[in-house]
Image (cartoon, rainbow, N blue to C red; front, side):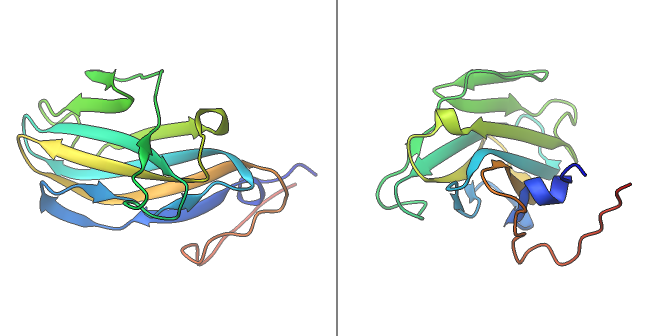
Length: 160
């Protein structure tokens, strides 16, 4: 029988609701030992017109968002209308509700990492933004089955 999604991937709540504001939003720090890939799924709420959203994946040698000083992981591929990469970060400008209630997906492969711990930083310039939640999915596990984080309270798997 083939392994299921839940057996191959670890799901974590990276960040819960962040009310409308301009402050930097940081996810929980994720330990990448045992995994070869991580995806951050950012579900936005309302984003004010002309807001400039910047998504930066950072890495660190310690499980910390500040000490020692984290470094930016350099991105190379981007898809999406109005999305660009600048100094390793994904930047998108809100225009006519293009980000309201939408999902931004950011994936980092292990080959792009030089440190064990990673997290996502979201900054907003010009106007304010709201984050409904950020889900992290660590994938390409080196051993199966994966144990889910305590954020996942129930699972259902249907397999033939």
